Image: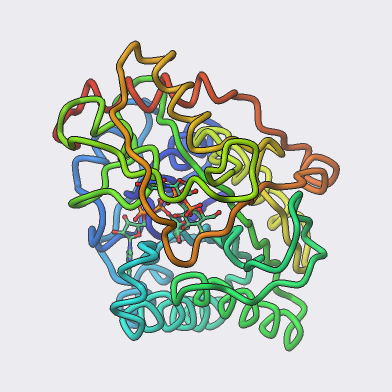
Length: 336
Ligand code: NAD
Ligand code: UFG
């Protein structure tokens, strides 16, 4: 089976391509390197011991997409490509709607015209907004997103639901990721953010390696056991494996299905700092700072549906996530 992976040079995409290649799928990677580097492709080859086709292309480039579908057999698409920085999305909402929503519409038009109607989409726990209590279940109402990035995910989910309602030959899997951290055990690929990281784990590893001075812990007055925000951190390799189950589901028939990919466990910011210090042997300098706007107090998954219907379950614990994040950072202090 041949899978087109948009955004395959990025953090989650590169880990997923390794799993796909190792399981014998033919892989075609599409990326415009907006937030990734060509070196990621060399690393995918090195780790997987296999090869793939690469197309430097933008998902908004209809002619480029048509050429890819004309020149390659594609059975399904895993669609990672998108912009993902929450704070940037508040400053540049139009760029986020154009790239994420517009790009997905263009991709789906090209897919439809090429007769490829199977897609796995990278959605996010952010679509649960701030009104649902954790553990979050797929049947809870989505919406009430707190930033344009999250709203792009909510809109794209709705667009894909409409696409399926209009033509039920489509097979669509919406994956709502919780908080991916960690890296491949080789330390050859991992999260490589441009500039100052927005997310907790890359910030922690950059403080530990001495690149940044001090972590700001955003809020210590939340209604949580230690006052700091609680999230469901998931190892990126577990997440990558979830995509193999999801793509098998997409290939096996038609329909629209939604799955949480999380662990069901919530860890506070202070829990993560402690686990990281233990795993790395490094001290993480931190101070309490005001709450970050748009953050919810608690967000963790009920992943029962993915276990029951996809046979997928996260295997790695927070220690392993921290060890692998640190291994990647130590081996690549400047990123790729
Ligand atoms: P990433 O930025 O590392 O990867 C995204 C890739 O898409 C990058 O290689 C980038 O160059 C590419 N890209 C962006 N716009 C493109 C375009 N118009 N055309 C072609 N390529 C384009 O991000 P990631 O962490 O790997 O996330 C992958 C997907 O998962 C994204 O859609 C993201 O919103 C979603 N997601 C991520 C998280 C997270 O915490 N990392 C959580 C929930 C959902
Ligand atoms: N945090 C800090 N200091 C930092 C960064 C984060 O204290 O420098 C805290 C946050 O306040 C939050 C926790 O660490 O309590 C996790 O924050 P992240 O920024 O790592 O992750 P978020 O939960 O805010 O969001 C992430 C992705 C989104 C995705 C969401 C899904 O960035 O794209 O997970 O749950 F939608």
